[in-house]
Image 1 (cartoon, rainbow, N blue to C red):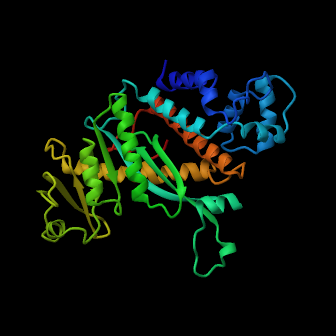
Image 2 (spheres, rainbow, N blue to C red; image 1 turned 180 degrees about the horizontal axis):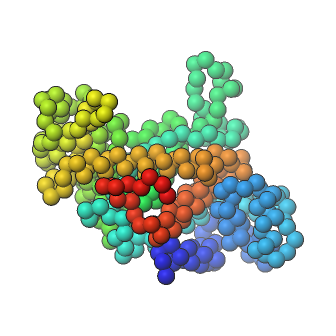
Length: 352
C-alpha cells in the first residue's frame, strides 16, 4: 500500500474513533445519537468544502448517507458542535503517519523546512475585527479597511507538505510565530525519529536569539543575510569571497556562502552546516527551492483551494476551514510524492 493510501485509511479510522470524537466535540451530548450528520460526515464535508458552495456540498452528502439532502442550516448547526482542534489534530496525525520510518524527501540526511509568512483576508464581523484586527491604511477610512490575519507556515521544501501552520492577528510578528513553530516542529519530528532538521529562511528572520534557539534544539539553519546585518559578514561580502567559515556573536564556526544574482546583487547565505562534503552551490540551489515550497504553496491555497473564500463567518468556522485546507493540500501533495517522487533541489520540477 502506498504511503498516501495508508495515511488516508488511518485518518478515516481516527474520525470515527469515539475517543477522538469526545476530545473534539464542543458539547458532551453532541454526536451521541444516530443522526444523518454524524461527526465523521460533518468533518469530511468541511474538508471537502475546499471549495464548493455550501448547499452543493450538502446535496453531495446525500450520496454518502443515502438519504434526502440535508439543509445548509442543519449542516451549519452540526459543524458548530465540532471544534477546529479536531482538524488540527487530524493534520498532526497525518504527519506522524506519513513520516513514520520513512526517509522519502530527505536532503543529505536532513528534513529541510522553509518558513515564510503571508496575509489572508477574512470575513468582516465584530468577532473577527476583535480577534484579528484590520490592515491599517493611511488613505482609507477605518470602516473600509479589510480584516486580515497573518499566516505562517513551515513547509518541507522537497515535498511542499505543510508541517506547521499558524493563523494569528496581524500584530503578531513573523519571527515570533516562526520561533513557536520551529520548537513544535522539532519536537514532532524527533518524536517520530527524524532528528536531523535544517530550517531555511529568507531575509528578515535572522537574529541572535533565533540562531541560539535552533542550535539549542540540535537543529541546523540556512539564513539569507540582509545587507548591513553584521560587520564581519559585510566585510566578507565586499571582499569578493565566494565562501568562507566565520565566527560571529560567540557562536560555533558557521559557513558563509556568497553568490552573484543575475540582478547584480550579492546573495549571502549563512548556515550551521559546515560539512565540506556538501558543496556550496547545493545550499544556494536549496535556498531557491524555498520559493517553490513556500511562495507557490501559498498560491495553491489562495487560488486553487480558495482559502480566503470562507463558507462560514464565525471564528470557529474560519479556523475549521483553515485547517481543513492545510490537510487537503497535504493529502494532495502526499499523493504527488507517491506518484512522482520528492523534489530534487538540483533539478526542481517545473510542473506538478
